Length: 108
Image 1 (tube, rainbow, N blue to C red):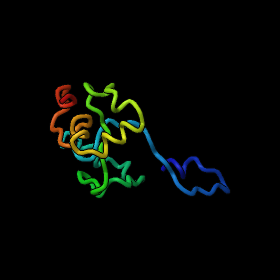
Image 2 (tube, rainbow, N blue to C red):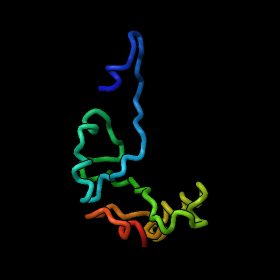
Image 3 (cartoon, rainbow, N blue to C red):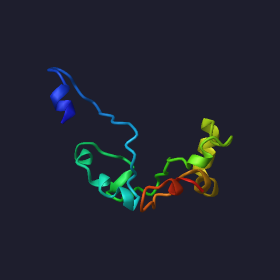
Image 4 (tube, rainbow, N blue to C red):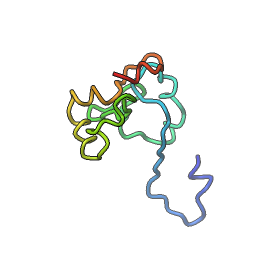
């Protein structure tokens, strides 16, 4: 993989971190093919139990586009509040059950 190809003699890799916006989630049926990408054979997603199933403690963070600028979620504290409250989370965060990617799926 990437680490083996790029580390130099004497390098000690303690951990690897892969981040970015991959434009898919582990739960939505529309993203099922992406959840089986070989990337997950090389890197571990600590929130994933297996393809299509997240660990019980995970919380999605894809914002509903029509609520992205709401005063509640534009601060770190407000976003935390919205993520911790199931009713607020439903209003501000996209559910992990999207069957087809459409603009309508991203708004309340």
